[in-house]
Length: 213
Image (cartoon, rainbow, N blue to C red; front, side):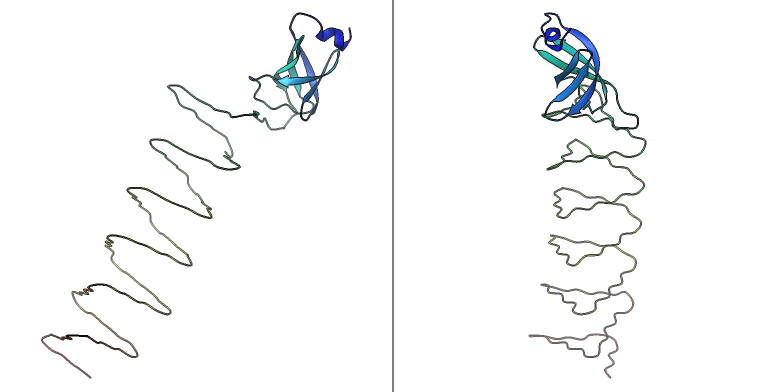
């Protein structure tokens, strides 16, 4: 029976074959010859050359229904020509792997949910430009190390409660404010090679004892 006569049969039947090549079309080798097959919509596994496949042979053509067996050690790839959506109505979706899970988007990757939880023993984030918009940030960490070329902050209020603060400035340390209030319970020390205190209206030094020189 020739391939042309085989496709001319009025009934639809199933037959297993081998994938000869994959390009713009999938060429499948059946018992009666080689045919261009179209992937059925339910066949999400992308076939590769050498795979054993199950086909539906119809008068209109050949449909590749499923990949029965692939090359040993070759990865299984799910591929579609258009959009792919995985949905669980009333349940949950879990993606598990014994080694690694990669989520790659050529343009964008979006994560949306009422809550997002990320748990890992160790992590790293590399982002060229980051924009964050939120209402509240709460963080509890043992140690923070920050290395940056420039840091610009614009805040309505800043409150810090610390036990010890050490600041080392190599060049200029400048503060401009409407009012500056410095208070120390025990000692306030100001030291410098040169010290200049100037006031436009009033300069006042008050204390039980004042030592100059």
